[in-house]
Image 1 (cartoon, rainbow, N blue to C red):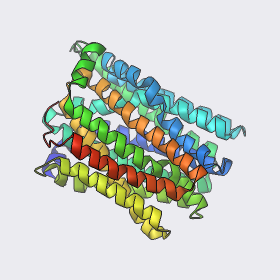
Image 2 (cartoon, rainbow, N blue to C red; image 1 turned 180 degrees about the vertical axis):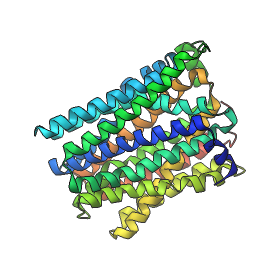
Image 3 (tube, one colour; image 1 turned 180 degrees about the horizontal axis):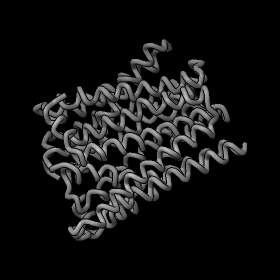
Length: 403
């Protein structure tokens, strides 16, 4: 562990915020994995299975800008409290519907979309909150630790979901996630209560027009959104199709599906070791080239191999590449823009990110349905290769300091 990361971890305000996000993200991953596994038992359609990922990402297109506005205008602990309460209530609704025997593919996709709407209002504020808990010079390293926490949740969430489903019914798992989400809402409300007791006045609100002008003029933001489009479009084939591949191509049980998806999180945990070294490279763009290369090699390995051990290792490499990309992009964006517009900057970036994921997931489902899953994997590798070539042509500079 590097000295910069230790310094960030010693900050109690950041540490408490970090732990709350781990619990919340863990519950979200348990619920989303449970829903993905449930749908593989409700429908054998590749397109229908991919729609869970689409439903989880598409609400960012509709509500992303509004979420950014709300996050910058109102108390961030209050926004987080309301978002967590909404997530918990949606989980309770799904638990009730499942317990009453009403679970169907259409209902599951609809509730997943509702769950995602609440997540939309949570994510920009949760990420912008990093910059509020540490000094500006520590933001990039705080983003590394924040991503570590997210990937602890990603690593444990799918595996925990698969294990819980061996001993619990779907409704009971959904009740557990609701309890975790509601517990975190209490922590954020405590932060809101303390904020109201403070005497400091909030900073002046910057209009969306002025904020957009600043964002649109940033070459760094344009490059980051390009990378998000390519990497997350191509990588979504794994998130959307891997449960389907595990069940119908690799003949895995529910626990096996969860274990394979958990491999991506285990690989992502390596980010805390690899990324601090990457951040010290002379040319910061080398980190992005590494992300493209690792992701393409991982997806190609999954396409070429049917050996479970090899696929597990490839999923770990994929998790590392995805996690590094998320951390590099988030760290650059959070350290380049002022706190007064940061929620909106992150919201716009997340719209691009989740649009790429939604279209990539649906594209992978269509190809798998009408051709074969191998074709979806091949197309993703092709997109990564073409994207890296185009990136080298239109963003030749390695200077990322200008926002």
